[in-house]
Amino acid sequence: MTDFEIVKNYIDTKYAGKPYAMRNGNNCIWVSMGLCDMYFILRDSKIVDIQVD
Image (cartoon, rainbow, N blue to C red):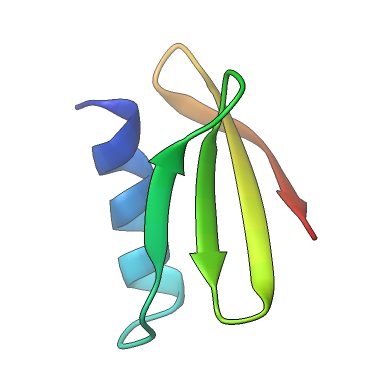
């Protein structure tokens, strides 16, 4: 699985039905969901940190 697929599966499971946008960031995947931005840091195909802004 790619990093995008891993984050997509996480978001679709945890926040089912909510609209969001994803893009590559600085060594992370950025997810924008309404007024909330989340930064997913992955290593070895695993989410190791999620920062919420």
